[in-house]
Length: 191
Image (cartoon, rainbow, N blue to C red; front, side):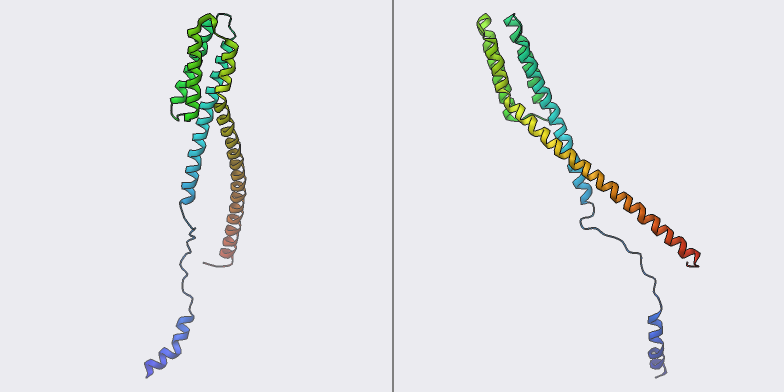
């Protein structure tokens, strides 16, 4: 009976004692997923940068090839244009490979130029120039689409950097506040 009374009287006192609180661990939903998403975003940006460089090179070569057709020596002019298209085709087949539409447009351009070379001095160079530009319209459109996507991605990066800078500032401020209150606690005699 004495044991029962002791538990009855001392129980609430024992329960009222402060228990050490285990440190809290902040867990975010999908911890680690943010890093994976960031890595995928970075890979996508790297791929589109390579696509833009590739397509810009292809457009540049076709434009230069078209300009080569202004030479008065038709066979030499056509060969120079073919060399430019060959360089564009080579780059289009490198990693990352250009779209099938781009490859087809370049192949058709090269076929037209080779047909012009077969015609020799009868080849219509202004018509070949026009055809080169028309056939590679698909490449221009892909390049402009990629440039637009790059512009949007760059704006997203700027927005993310701004947000991260704000979050970093907030975290710094929180750390300073926490350290200040810890020092005050210790000065007040806390342990």
